[in-house]
Image (cartoon, rainbow, N blue to C red):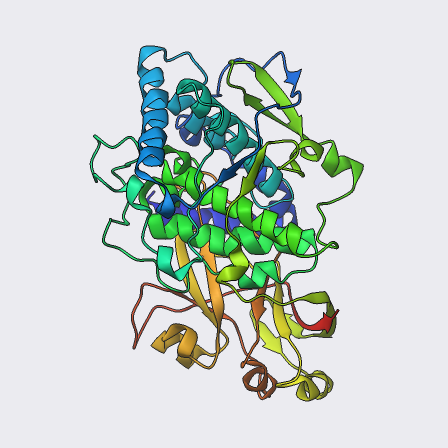
Length: 460
Ligand code: C2O
């Protein structure tokens, strides 16, 4: 069976057992041995010791593109030491290969049932992962003031990969990774790395999936190679600078408004994640311990996202209308719904929320989303009247043997688009086109959804 055939039979299977049941089973039941061979568990994890307080001095993580020569030398020395350790002592959990396996293992690899993506542990887990990784790097070069750099891809001046990672662009550079498709001369498309919609969310449950889908996923795909699949992503050193930026955006969002808090349920706060520390000890750390990264994890971020991004200061997003979903891909705005939208045109911040979009799972890719088929075929991107935004799919593994989870919801800014949408009197659908496909006859696929909502921003 080739991949398409496998996909087909999987789809029939999912249909047969019912989509809801399938959603419940996805993280666990579809793990196959082939996928498990990609990574081993990160080591002996049977005796966890709880994380204890960190007394390093508080230091700043800085933009990778602005590091000084000696900071770059230090960063490269740290990754070189980590790579060397993987060769000199393959059993040492601090070696580079084991570090990459931690990520793989936590997205269902190696037969594990842990899945840290597509849910509310995405942000705390990756924060803790980087924290332990950073302390190991610091230990290996004998400098506990070492902090990871971040790739601030939302900054228009930093759309190329930070040069430390590409210069020299070969394996003499410990920050280089050969499978990348993004090269030193390449620049991110402006639609990649746009966090404004995520940053304008008013609560964590909306912020986290919005940040995770795109920009997070779109940068994985834009870098390409190992980064396009969660089981191999951490093999590329740019992964850690990418995730430091994702972590910074969480930090920025938290600082922007007192109401922007992490979840407060005991279940979330007490959820623990396990990592090897800089002394090879297996530690567990609770979500509650990572919320305040400055006081507890001893780093801050230099630079503010709001220097480059305009984001809205809103109290809340309130539901205005729920569109009719006739079947998963036929959507209808009712006459009553239209009446509610008309007064908001040009007056209110509005957004479209797709509930449980069923993203394609045949490849890792970023897609432009449209609500008009002709526009989709022409695929002109943001300048098209029915363009809604970017949707990113990052698969678990290249062989497609494990299915990704689906986002619970995705939000799209309707600035300048509400009138066009309100004018739709007939049924319509949502369409995805791979962003790299140029028109005029791009391959278009319908995006099935469970629900569609129009939200209005409530001013503070
Ligand atoms: Cu755990 Cu960006 O992925």
